[in-house]
Length: 301
Image 1 (cartoon, rainbow, N blue to C red):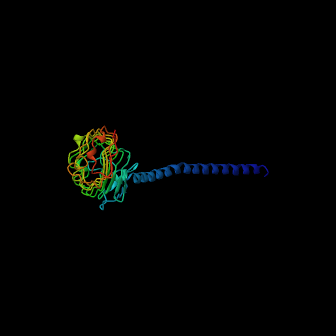
Image 2: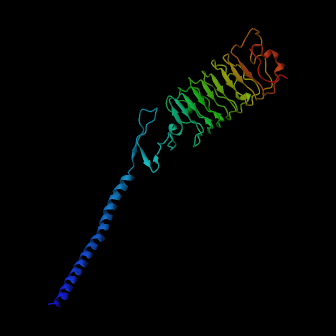
């Protein structure tokens, strides 16, 4: 009986080892299969998420001056793709490229650089597009914007302005074309009060004899730092400030500012005339200033 005990315990030990081995095999098989199943589910789930992420989303864009929303725009990897412009290009709309604020558009030193007058929102009253690379003004640029009251294109590269470019701007009061490359002036709107063409390449032959005659509201005329050989004729009675310094003016006449045959005529509105920086010696023309309240600024000796 005593010898049977070790045999009995050996039998129990062997049975226990075999059962443990079977159990380990089954669990191992289970765990080996689970990742495969989980991976398949993950792949299916990831595919669904991927396909969902790749679906183009729709974005509704509104513009401040257009009551009709534009067509939906697809989203790419970097956000909304701008709607094509009138010629099918992909340029940014003006109010994304510039700043539009209650009737005013500010496009100053814009990047990417502006090379043409931007398309404006409806009812724009004030345009500031200074220090860009605008080279030309065409008739169509302002043909549909009769609400404009002020245009400032200072510091561009404008060398050409088509005839009639400002003809429909019946409310325009202030126009600045300073620091450009103009060699001649276009016809100007009748209601102008301020015109600035300082720092251009204007010569007398590029300014028509009646260029300012009909501008009965013009108060401030700036034509300094050009290449003018004479003072523009037929200046309106409304003129208060006239800047012609740093040109090539060599002579003036009794009719330049006054009416030589009318000694009682007084140019009451004229406050300042600058002729400094010109070759003309003003002391040689004493009868040219009899109608003025004060003598022009310039060289007398």
